[in-house]
Length: 227
Image 1 (cartoon, rainbow, N blue to C red):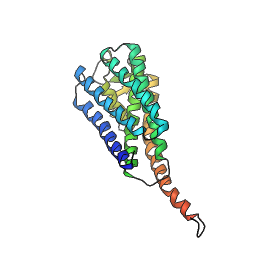
Image 2: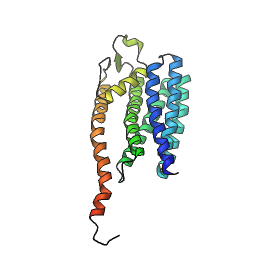
Image 3: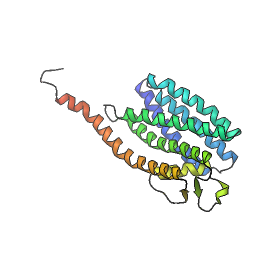
Image 4: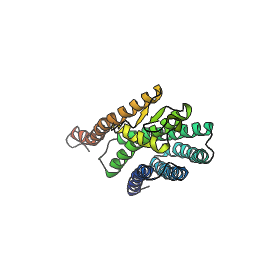
């Protein structure tokens, strides 16, 4: 696949991730809203697989993980038993964890800072939010009441839309306090996500700059007349 093809996947994936967050805020928390959220997440999974498929070593693991996640999401949507929900959120978390490791490794490679790297770095940042979103849902399924939304009774539970919002504001360290993690594991995971958001900015910028400077350093170290 050509470089221009790779550049097309980058912006599409980023737009898909942004659309997922925007639609989560615009749709209701009823059945229809959950279906819209799931369909948007399907598209994000497909585009993430296309992005990872640029490397042959990552292609089949990405396809297998996404191929398991999509039918599990459908099952969880129309037949939401506790066991199916646990497996669904586990696979989704594993996929976006794999996605994060692969893209982070790509950003650390030597080379110029292309538009594709910029798109990839932005997609990775939002991808971290989806990863923790899946983990938060898994925690909530295993231990109901791990998160409390202010203004709602604890028995009402917390919606997927609220957990997606909570994941994003935690990653950005915004944190309005309208959703509170109360279980010990939920608190630790929220703290880890906030740390991930802060460290990602510093580490990614350093890796991009180091990767950009490496070819220049190699050129300056060559002997005169050496090709």
